Amino acid sequence: MIENLEEVQILAETWSAEEVLQWAFKNFGKRVEIASGFGAEGMALIDIAARLNPDLRVFTIDTEFLFPETYQLIEKVEKRYGIAVERVRPRLTPEAQAEIYGPALWAVKPDDCCALRKVGPLKEKLAGLPAWITAIRRDQTSARASARKVEWDAKFQLVKINPIADWTTKDVWNYIFAHDIPYNPLHDASFTSIGCTHCTRAIRPGEDARAGRWSGFQKTECGLHAETEIAPSPLIQLNLGGEPRAEG
Image (cartoon, rainbow, N blue to C red; front, top):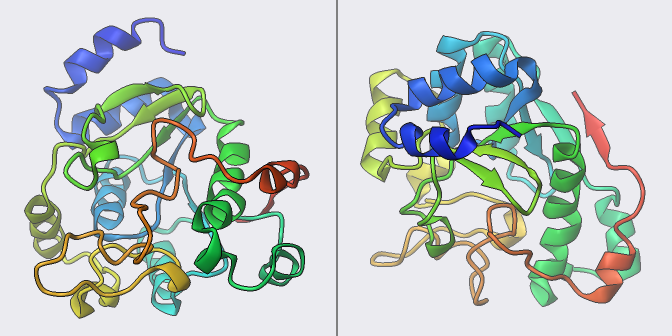
């Protein structure tokens, strides 16, 4: 942990996204990585980071339920920036999960599905890092409203860096269009927040930007960025042992 993290946390609020990233790369080098789901925010962040550090490291939690458009965008990112995106996958294949927990776990217990396919793999991945970088913004959800540009991640026990925490949706799209950055075409079909195929839909006129995630449930976070753990059932916790599968 950075000794003067509290001081940096205060100073970082006056820094631009570029300055936050420069601090991260200077202090952690190759041991800080960007976690991305390749939404609009993530694409803007990766572009900024690549301009500062051509050797940046990017990983994604590949739930194996992502949209084809998302997988295609990952390939575009790799070609455009000359990087290999690490795919961190759950311990259970979709077929094995269905055998153990029944088909369509996401439709019955979405928190359990997220615990298996997102939070568990992320926890394993972050265990080997001193810091991680995310593209979360404060105005996305109530759980993210208090996010600082540099902070201590108590849940995962490492430094968490959110360079564009103070950006608005308009800021993100202005940057994307100004720099001709590729983005997920689902955004043009009213998919404002894109996750897994089973738990994401296009929003309707007048709905909140994240209304298309876990529609029908009182759920707005998968658990990756929630300050406290979204508790899965005891059965899920018992089956989180073993090594995650990864590629990249």
